[in-house]
Amino acid sequence: MARRNHGGPTSAPSGTPSPATPAATPGRQREIVWGSAYQLTTWYASAYPAEYDSAEVLHICDRCFKYMRKEATLHRHLAECQQLTPPGLELYSDHGQPSQPTKQLHQPRLQSLRIFEVDGKAHKLYGQNLALFGKLFLENKTVSYDIDRFYFYVLTRTFTSDGVTAVQVLGYFSKEKASLEQHNLACIVVFPPFQGQGHGQLLIDLSYTLTRREGGSGTPERPLSAQAERSYRTYWQKAVLSALHEHSREYYALDRLCRQTGMTGDDVMTTLYRLGLVQHWHSQAVLCIPKDDLQQRIDRVNISRFPILKPRALRDWTWDSVSP
Ligand SMILES: [Zn+2]
Image (cartoon, rainbow, N blue to C red; front, side, top):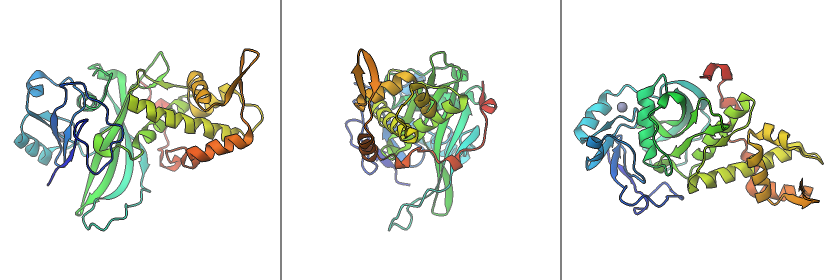
């Protein structure tokens, strides 16, 4: 099968847009072969063992993320790999994705988007390999080998191509099982071939859905990459405006906005300031939302597709079933 090449910062990807390709760490780019379909140029260094890091091209399974030095080894592995889906609990299953209209007879037909929760303690090798791969596209993060402390929420798409059904991993976010600092997300990455399609917003929405189910509020671990910062700002604006829209009252309470969104008070306030909805009156911050103005803002950011996760696609589970 011909591989689709998705380049890094100095090699613009063709096909799928990659609007936020960052500047890479100098000297850190390298070529990898990912499964049978993709050849990628990485953006940042990871922490693969030295004997693999020194290989001219690293070969990585797109199902279990096992890494290999030689192409022939990858081919043999792909024929035998038993990891058809990420291991763990399926939290989300959206079978309602329409097929993209296409004139190509053999264009893959998307069937569903699914998200799996992988417990790092129960699936240590998968978690380690996934984290090593994700780091190739993540700035400002280190790969923790203490995988036990994390859950990984892995987004996949299932599609049929030439009569064969396959599962493709699109990206993931990790989350500490117990965070003293209200962190509801440690790292988030959507792999380059699948960026610019709203998958990052979907994963962020899941992180806040999990937080609301815990009955608290949360915030992503800092620092955020420029790419993640843009995604979060977009998400926070939609979440806050959607909550204000539901409020529909003269007076708005910060704690209620936090409960509705799952966001921390700091993130809600920062977003309100960015939206220009806060004024100062006698040294006090006052929320000032003329009704016409609110509607205009809501129309501008198009909150009609909010929340992003489809409620009917969320599996019925309780937080007790996924607690550490
Ligand atoms: Zn594999």
